[in-house]
Amino acid sequence: MSLKYNIWTIGCQMNEADSRHLGSQLESLGYLQTEQADEADLVVMNTCVVRQQAEDRAVGRLQYISQLKMRNPDLKVGLMGCMVGMKESGRLKKRFPYVDVFMPPSDTKPLMHFLAEEAELDADKVAETLQKAIVNAIQDEEYILPALQKTSTVIANVPVVLGCSHACTFCIIPYRRGVERSRTPEEILHEVEKLTAQGVREIMLLGQIVDRYGCDFDEPYDLADLLKDVAGNDQLLRIRFLTGHPNYMTDKLIRAVRDIPKVCPHFEVPVQAGNDKVLGDMRRGYTAQDYRSVIARIRAILPDAAINTDIIVGFPGETDEEFMDTHALLKELELDKVHLAKYSERPKTVAARTLPDDIADEEKERRRLIIDEQAEAIITRRNLRYQDQVVEVLVESRAKDKWRGRTPDNRLVFFQDERELLGALVNLTVTQTGPWSLQAEHAEILVPPYQPIEPVEVARA
Image 1 (cartoon, rainbow, N blue to C red):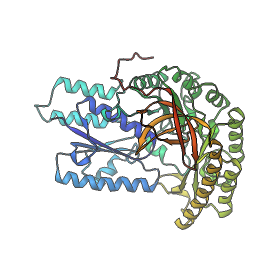
Image 2 (tube, rainbow, N blue to C red):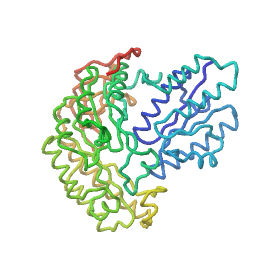
Image 3 (cartoon, rainbow, N blue to C red):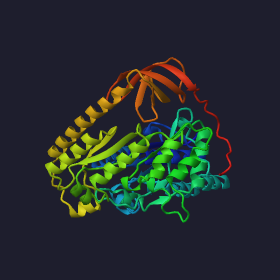
């Protein structure tokens, strides 16, 4: 009987990519995936601690897993991601003694070594083939999709920059994911080629500050260069990237988005606040006017591009007047989407050490609602221009009785069609607009649905 694994993932697209990576490694060792933790022989929790709410959810999940382990002492438990970070294993082992192995973000080697040691304890399991399989899984040059994803994965996340060295005062990521380091173009192109050979049609290139890709290379090679090389993959339909930073959003990169047909006109450029004092306290490295200039440059080169942003309300010391500067900036710029969060103090960050969290949660919530209502009104108005227009949609999944997909500029679209359209590129006529999605009909197939195929050997670039 095959062993079963279960991976629970919370947080960003980077965590989703790490979980996919781990799943493929475990399946190369003969494990089968189960979506039920109580059926598993191995459970792994891939965690996020960017906000307190995410950390609380992870702790709740750990408590549930501890009950499973009490009922089944043979259950193996792994903890992964930003909750573990680069140096937290010792502290966490005392707090959660039932966890067998701790893995920093994007690092599955501790689990692979643990499984090897466990195998050596049972003479019946020790075999040269198993040891070779574990070595191959650690090297992981094949990037095979886990079995349950092989027939449904239209979009895949591919990390290109790991860690971050920018150290904004509110952000825990540098302490948990380590210093910034770029993956080689060869490694990224190989992963993309493997994924598209298995039916993936859109790639999301990921980094905490993705537009800093290549800054640590000896030879000049940046994100714009990488986009051009990734677009050379004949099986790939679309490319996106996130998350950018205003300071590194170069004209070269913006022009690459304009000039490379496969790259979607969609930018994620967090501003976080619209007041210069707050931006200074955050150590973002730019002013509100600098941010306006970035948006102006994007719109000058790509007038119809979608530009999304991030906002934190209730940062320590933020006055109501300073908060209203953020409100005014968003009103002026009319961005396409706002990822909104209330400030959440994170341990070891500069803000936690030096700035008192002095704004009541009720006030943070009031400010959040103001920005949320403003953003909804703006996007409702901006989406009106799609009414009765034909839009191109990559079909990602089915939601109840409707297909769902996205336009190149990242608008979510729902439509009904009895045909099997997963992975198809279609033209649709928009029949209804709203703040969060568009409704459409009359699908005209531009590129037919993909037929998932077995992984093939692909030579390295």
